[in-house]
Image (cartoon, one colour):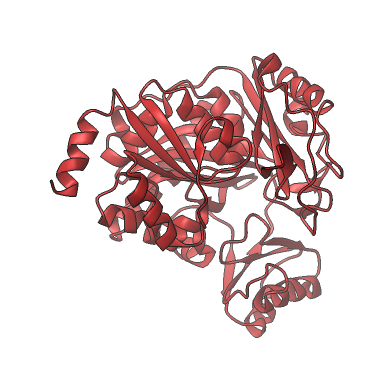
Length: 439
């Protein structure tokens, strides 16, 4: 029987029995697996590579998420009814394209659409073409161009790596010398480990940052939720940028009028613009916004669920997450109603000592035997098991998460739970949600 006929036959019975494969092994993927586990239609979940926490909910299989051939082979062997791609690297490498060409059902954007995240230069030029508000900027392909461009900007100024940088490719510079140094380290590969061919010099915007998530089906964008991330490693938003040290989501983060404005003036313009350029966008559009005195300005796009915002949002999501995946793939987002639990949710990252710099892995973790107590869920971001003991396996180790009718109460639950968890060098911010609590 041809593969397409088999796929259609299987898809017709999806509401009764479904096998889902989740690509990735971080806190975001643990949260997605947790949400999938609640769906009555899902009978089996496979995660690749997964982590120590995901292993309690899904069958974990090793795979290199930087190797498209290996991931395609795994999907071909496992034959899932749906593959969900979590991290940005497989999307940027074209995993969705390869799976779709083999008639597998997969959630996420194709490689050309994923350029919105994989190339800040592409995203900036795209926003210019389609009238999407963003900061003034210059694209530079050499240090001489950086020096010349800096003359047009007031200080402080922002220097960004154009390519993927795991949340660490943004440097705020108070002097032109600092900006030149940051750009030089990006071009040389010293800062991020790989040499950049382009950097973006950008005006520094003031205001509060907001992460806005939209579900896209190639034609339409609909709102999922808004959240606020905490990128800096230190309390009071000090120190270097990280992949995110915590996040929260509340009903009042954005007014209904502002939510509508963002959908119409950013998300829908992205979907319409990508379609008009022959690169339809399906999947999650993460819009990083600065709520500046000039109005909302786009800082960046991600083309997948954000991390750690996803951990917080999943606790509020009442709609079956499969409905989101299916609506995006099938082009039926306009018929979907996404429901969130009222109130608030938050997540706080417990990270390895030294993160986001050098850190040691393989450190034993204690206090993980109370998961689910008091409504607190501990998502694993960087863990594995060794000789029967859970140990650290990354910079961001755990995402301790809770929801409540009140943000202060959700955070209280999280910090009380963190008192019971321990590993050598463990660090976490004690001021997640501080802006919302002040207001």
